[in-house]
Amino acid sequence: MIKFFKNLFGPGTKLDIDELLRNGAIIVDVRTEREFKAGHAKGSINIPLDKLTKNLSRLKKDKPVITCCASGMRSGTAKNILKNNGFTQVYNAGSWTGINTK
Image (cartoon, rainbow, N blue to C red; front, side):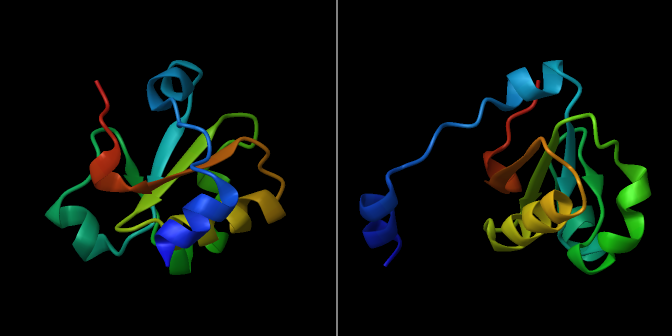
């Protein structure tokens, strides 16, 4: 099924996380606290998806925000929440394991 959607919509653009970080981006891991404690991308902060709306003040609307989770589903939802709340530079990185920060 995923292959079908990739064929239909294309692979999308490759996210240049290093470039975004150079531009002041913050990585927001929206998994649960327990998942985050078990492992996370270096430099990321944990705001669980169910607490994101109440913690928007922790983020700056004029800086890029990179969302991540376990598979990309919750981070996609987080991206939409942020966009709906006035954040303009929001990027879904998908799984946190694919983020290689230096």
